[in-house]
Image (cartoon, rainbow, N blue to C red; front, side, top):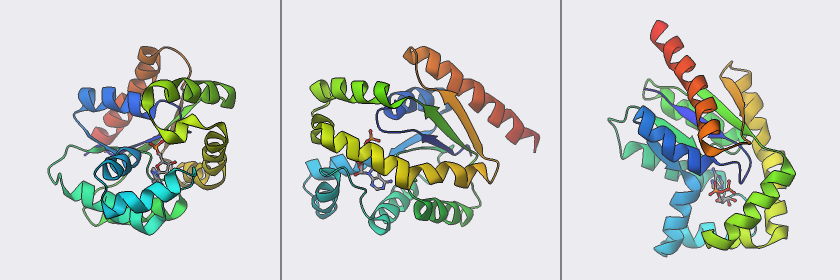
Length: 197
Ligand code: ADP
C-alpha cells in the first residue's frame, strides 16, 4: 500500500493534484471536505452538523471527522493505497489515523506538503469562489479564518510527521502540470524506498 497525506493550506491545490495522482498511482482519493459537502447536499445528520462549522471556517469536531474517515477507508478494503486530502487536520486526527492504519498493518508513507504563499492563496480562493459555489470561499473573513485555523491547528501535523521522518515538501506555485511533476518525483522516490525495505 502507498498511503499519502497531501498537505497544504486552503487553496493550495490539493483537490486538483489528488485527482491526477490517483490516476497515476491507482490510489483512492479521500477528501474529508468533499465528503462533508456531499453530506450537506444529501441533507444527512452529519451534513447538518458539519455545515455549522464549515460555514464559519471552523473545523468539524475531531470525533465526528475521525469516525467518518475510518468508515470511508473501510469501504475499500482492497485499495492499493489512499491519498488523504484535508485529513488529518489536527494532531488528534493524526494519532487516530496512525493507530487506525496500524490496526490494518498499514501506515502513512509520506506527508507531502505543497507550499503556497498567503497572497497567492487569497487570490486563488477569490477566483475559485466564482465557479465553486462554495459559501466558505465567498467571504474574505471566512477565508481568513480558514487560513488562521490552518496555521494554528493544522500546521503542527507537519511537524508530527516530520518527527517520524515522513515529510516532504514541494513548491505549490506554478502551472498545474509542473506542480504535479514535482509531486510525482517525491512519490516515485518514496515508492522506490518502500520497495527496497
Ligand atoms: P480547503 O482546504 O480548501 O479549505 P476542504 O474542502 O478541505 O477545503 O475543507 C472545507 C471545510 O471542511 C474545512 O474548512 C472544515 O470546516 C471542514 N473539514 C474538512 N476536513 C476536515 C477535517 N479533517 N477536520 C475537520 N474539519 C474538516
